[in-house]
Length: 623
Image 1 (cartoon, rainbow, N blue to C red):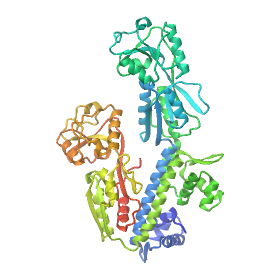
Image 2 (cartoon, rainbow, N blue to C red):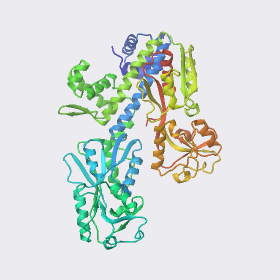
Image 3 (cartoon, rainbow, N blue to C red):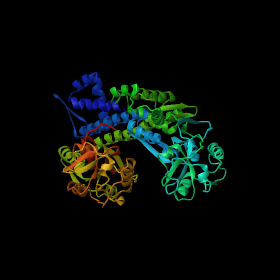
Image 4 (cartoon, one colour):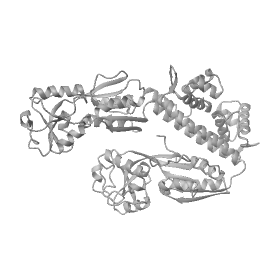
């Protein structure tokens, strides 16, 4: 017998009901069959899990550990199902969007980006400014998923495109210091003594030809060429000539310039969306849909498909899902072939195919795409594959841990934690639970900042870390990091007496003149940059008078009215002492807490503490 989800579900039901009879009634199975399944599980684990008596059953120490591990596994599996469905619907994932310099000047593009983030807040949108000639190459090479820029048709086979808006080239772009900068309109005659800068004719042949034809109609036949559009605008801003620009630039001109209508001059220019035709990514489809809605002036609403509603009504772990289904998915995606997966798993090809079909039916999503030369995972399948690897390891750990605990747990475990006040009482709950379940196990708590925890684990100064979820926190394959708690940085922490503390929300401009209390960049560059980039996206340039290494120091200064600090969604209900958390309009930085430990850990005391941590962590809805 090999341990599968069914055996763990049966065991948990018996443990929770305290009786085989009541558990059998709850599970709708025969009591003798249920008893045989649990006996078989005990043989597989190699430990007694239940003590049987006249009044029912109770857990042994090993049984308690396996119950904890089983509950944790089922909770993680439910979250994995939720994320798989989100991936299938294109509501999580990554979209790499390239935008041309000219497109950035148009309000429709900025409204589109805002609409995408409003409709799909858990979708990672990576926006890269990229010149138009490079966009199609990047899309073709899969370096970009989608591009917005000037129309370069005809396109290669396999490249799809769609018009987004028209932005005719009809302006003269001159420096702000130019004598004509305040004019309502200019003529070619007024600019004839100045150097005109254009892109080379071969850079964008159709577009440059249209510009040349339009210039010739107003009597302009001479110009200088420069390789990049950024260089053109830089030359103009420096007062070394002029160039042409689109209608959008009248409202949003390049820095140091103004765009003025050029009398009699007009070259048509369509801005388009470009993507790979064979790309079935639901994320790209969703992004395209939002951009179309903005183009067509439709309201951006959070759409819920019928399939998504049905799945949400049936939330949880599918009853027919087993660990063998997840193993089949992992091996098949790694091998890229059902026949090779069958050989590796030691079953028939039809057996593997049947398991994949059963998995897709249970999950409610297509997970593999069948192609002429094998199979490839869908976006949902790729996500579930990675989740499945973690879940299988979790199941193996739970069984191995129960075997060890059958021999008794003693020793000590050193917890390195960030400021306990921000972990929802997690540390005190863990210390209490460990003491109750494992009287011979000593738990020692040390407060240690996030950036120092990985080094402390390597040096064995701590055994388990509870750290803030900084980007790129763990770069050591010997250290395991698992998200312990999801949260979002979206608030400003003010002293309760601060004038802004009574507001329902604040805008970027409300914070512009308030000192921002934050850490130096050297403390953790990745996190520092992520926060500053998020501020930049909402138009906030924080006033930083000084920086501080300690979180408690920042809170103390904020409580004394010295400035404001960044805070999380959870702190709206439970802020640090004497502080109030107020939402910042538009701010949304994924955040939370990570559980860290050494990947090769074998100490029973540490593994037992990890099991308790996973069980008593605060429960929040999966993202």
